[in-house]
Length: 297
Image 1: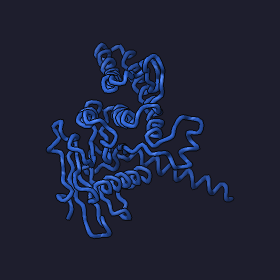
Image 2: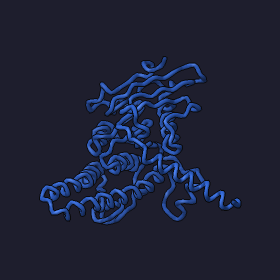
Image 3: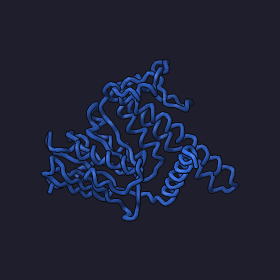
Image 4: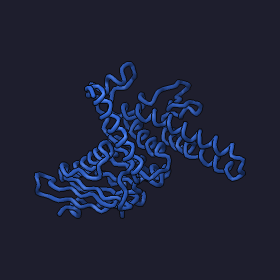
């Protein structure tokens, strides 16, 4: 066997192995707990038991809230990309429900609207009006939004052509989340007279008769749109949404409504976030707050 044939054979074996792993994969409903060793130069151990719905980490500046969120998110990315259930090198252990689950769907929301510095990102969006990290998130979400519409459309066609009268009602139900999302965004953006263009397959806005892309929104508007669009395209599945200080660019009224908005669009999202804002918990989420000193061992 020559070198080229060997490479092809090896690549085929790797592909087959990865494919089998995907078949065997069992998705979790939520994260039960997060453990982190060697936080702050091996001086602290973190053990955080999580609720299946909302988890809010609170504490003073510099105590490690963002570090916990970011290391947890990084660990989940390693698990997803490497198909691993653990990665001893990063000192993070994530425990799922059910316990025999091997993976979980998740999204990480970045709140800071800083300029894109990655040359790889800039090459991918060359010619597009993408300048910041929030723009980049919206760019990727536009593609997920298109996939979401295709998936929903295919399911509706299947139901409408089934000949079962009950399926007609189910097909109507499938159209409701997208309309709910559009109505909520229109309501939230009403002070600036922005409304979603309803007959477009991508997210566009109408303002005083002019069509504008989402990249022209304010930082706060882009941030809220990223969060809400992420919740929509999760399609009601069990997912985890991790956020580090999501209140940064949001008006206080939007901060108060944030968690309820997410769970309205996807009640099966487990929210894990850290915050300095008391407004985030004002809509009935006081019991979801964990002080960081209570999870440090």
